[in-house]
Length: 281
Image (cartoon, rainbow, N blue to C red):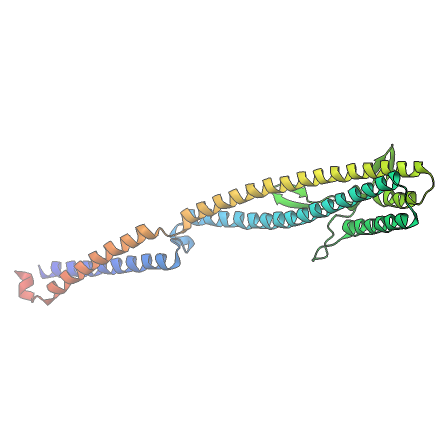
């Protein structure tokens, strides 16, 4: 009888030790916020968490690329908007020069403003950002990876904006068109100003087209960006379900285990105080 009682006491001690270990384990989960900290705790979930982690790293890289692309696209749109204003102003000046009787001072003023417009337009086309990257790409549009097997061009090339402008079937450059306008103002032939006005209108149409194309690029980046964000949120939610501690459930379990342990320890203390004769009875 005494042997059985001692064995029962040993079993009880082991049970209380397991309770203490479980409590310590759950408390560590609450402290760290993670219910899985090593692969041995749940190998299958650990593999899924690792795969999700790799996917999150990839999506973070895509998000960074998209953010960079959006920044470049916004700057390109801003420069194109300014370019639109410049060509529109040049067209307005040419209309004034064509319909008004200008004296030498008036011609000089228009030439000076057109010359400035030409210089500013050239600066907008060749501008670089704070990192030294050109606002518009040179010759070939750079494509950036934004999703699996998907690369997007972010901005147009400088050449596609400033060159190949169809003026009556002849390809012209913006710089040529501005130069033609400057010369037409002081020309004695009214036809020169008419031809210049036609060229400026073609130039404006070309810039407007480039603005539309840049808007399409921006919309595409936004759409892909929203998709990447949604997928990233799904990955985070899935990882949280696998990895994060459910504080409500875990704290409730800790409290129940503590109550059970306290009751077991109190009972064990009372039994342990009894004499051998009390145990035999």
